[in-house]
Amino acid sequence: MATIYMKKATEQDLPRVLDIIDLAKKTLKKRGVDQWQNGYPDPVILEQDIKDGINYIMVLDGEIVGTAALQQGIEENYETINEGKWDENSKPGYTVIHRIAVDPNYSGHNLSDTMIHHLLTLSRELGYTDVRIDTHFENMAMQHVIEKNGFIHRGTITMMEDENSVPRIAYQMLIE
Image (tube, rainbow, N blue to C red; front, top):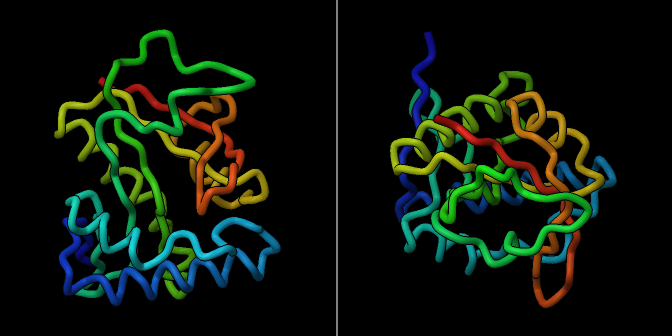
């Protein structure tokens, strides 16, 4: 049986985090998805995530196979939602899953689902009951993963990446 868990990334994990993000960018490009094709997320952002203590890595049998940021509190880009609204039971603070990626060499093992489950548990353990995530309109694979894991489509938000306004599909899940 495989051993799988998540933990906070350290500076020593940064090269592998960068590698996984780079592999994800290449996979998106192969699929014709314009997400993450203009430099974002770059090494500076990923290093800052680690310094801020919001980057988590998934470890499978001793090898880092996934990465994600779990922002806590308020995300400026999520404050304005278009073509919908956040759940009326939303709390002032929430977590946001950002920069989620799994090494494509491990595709077919449902690791994205597992990572989301761990991040939901972590969100709850941190005291948050409102979890949000977004993805690119062309990223059908991530839309499927997000919806399959119980997130509800709430509308669109605009992410500011490299000074460009980038619309994204916004999702939310309230947990007890």
